[in-house]
Length: 549
Image 1 (tube, rainbow, N blue to C red):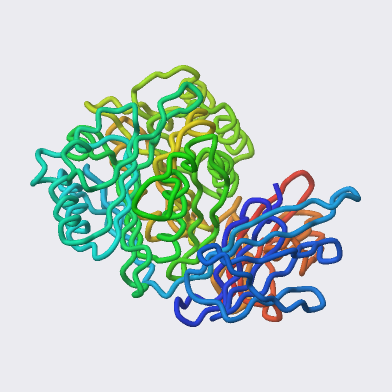
Image 2: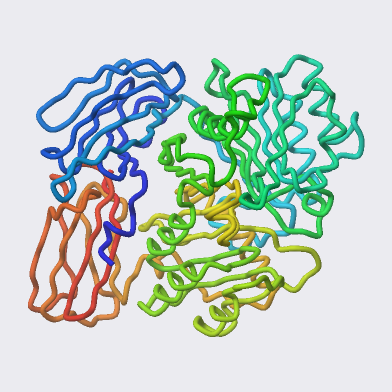
């Protein structure tokens, strides 16, 4: 697979949350965000045209300026959601399409990650993972207590000891002090907390018809519309609000992100299920599961980091799991309750068979129908696909890709989305793809603890080893544009070629070698950003990602 196909995520050009110039790659076009404006450029400008751009919140038309090969939108504000309608030409036919964009916010972009079980900090690269033990609910309560204006909750299952204590007590107290609260819960679960809420708090149960699955989300949106961009928060992850899920023995995590743009995205998803932007749900408009639409942005810049957000079953979250697998250059580490999707199994085995053998999985001991666990255990290295055998449920649904490989794109997929067909086609779920080495570092420490506890074997890794492909190492990375490609093994590649592509797949550098052991690649004349380097020698292909800043 060519490198450009393995990395279609947000690329950061200048890592500054306040004064920024950042590029987002969408399906048919790319967008350059600058402060107060954006520039949209189609991949095929001669056969594409914008028909309208609308501010989603106000339903007002956004004015644009058409240039020779791009469109400029000006006078934009932070965390502004735009609906872009456009046409492209395919096979001689004009096709109408729609994408949603979100301008970066002025928020801090701070990300906190917490686990309710032990973590192995001996594998830390400087960002020690935090085990809160049985205090995840205390952490949630502290944020509910600090909430100022609005609180939107979508929770699969919940418990509270009483109406005045625990999570229910915090919600009721927030309502009493004037916070507007809206709660969605799964209609098929006990949800013992719901009857404890004040009768003035509006709640909505998800459908229980056979055409629907479950409302499996566990997210909270705090103060999405606050005028201070440093206030809105999104709480999500795998943790239901029950005793077993929080106190144990079930293993879970929570990720909390301070960002108004992300909060607006989650609020939009909430209100599609709620059926209203007001305090009262509208059952005539409310949409759940397969009846929803793909109506949110997917690629966000959060505090200078790339975060992608997907909601099931409309947004193709399963395809993004596979894309993350395909993007791996050196290692994949998975902690998930189950894997029943054959396409995920195929992606993992294909990656292994291509030569990337450092794939490690710990899965729960459940054995649902269509479980791919036995097949993966046979297909991958011995003792690298292990079953969690401790008490309780290993309830995680996360994957860490290229954790030690700073030259690549360390990322984590995390959320409520199980790796199952129900999650992909029927359930209400959410999933984040967080492109951040610090977050990957923390999730890897949780993975390492669970994996080793279950008998897994970790192949010793180092940063240098992970930046090496078949003996070749690219350094320095990032750099100002001058890279040395060197073969530490001392061997050479005969009749080799080097090509470099930008994020749009355009080849901007090529070179041929009768024999290749070491060379210098000069990208100083290119713009800052991510580039993809491919070395081809016979039927052998090596890939690198290079960051110029």
